[in-house]
Length: 253
Image 1 (cartoon, rainbow, N blue to C red):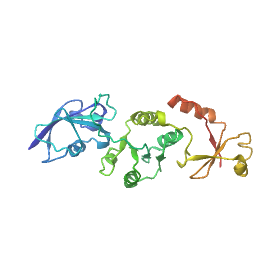
Image 2: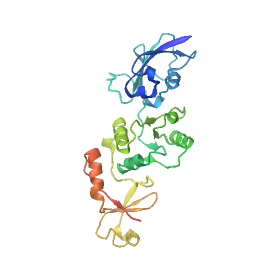
Image 3: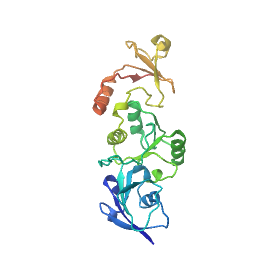
Image 4: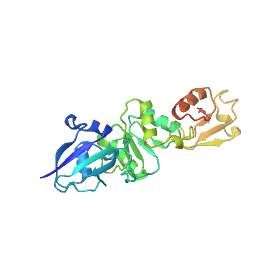
């Protein structure tokens, strides 16, 4: 029988059975089991792991566990100084797909200019397939979804409140410097492009936007946007998140 000892650090403990949390424990492993297989068998999604040390040396997910191995598993939010050790997380483009219960988070990320696919009727299979095809990061509170083999990049959201979830995503992917507030449609995720007022004057509802000079249209749903009465509220919201001044727009038809 192959027996190895495991220690999971920081927030990874939330996925473990209570008797294994915050301590080193021994576990029987299948013959020739990979470390990835055992980490997920113990309940921890591979997407949440940043670094694995076996007998104090870094390994990747394909490492085959040997009897007596001492395995330490660190999360993406770990404050550990890697000191040149290679992270398991490959850096890619920060494009997301949000699970069906994360509508508010999806809108907030779009407000900051990030590419986020979202529908409130997404099935798990759809999310997994789109994430693989488009190389998107899966945002979810569903541990079982992240354990799917086809999902290479994902983010388990520990917080339940959308505002706290947003801070988690911004922190984990260091997004603050990449934000481009109000460059995407909050409804469909399409990019906004400037448009001449004369071209869309006939589409403005009543006197709305009559005094505005800057107009934009969504390349996806063709909705029109301009500086509006709720701009102050949106400005305060983004300043709170990023401490970055910007121009805000409100939507028309």
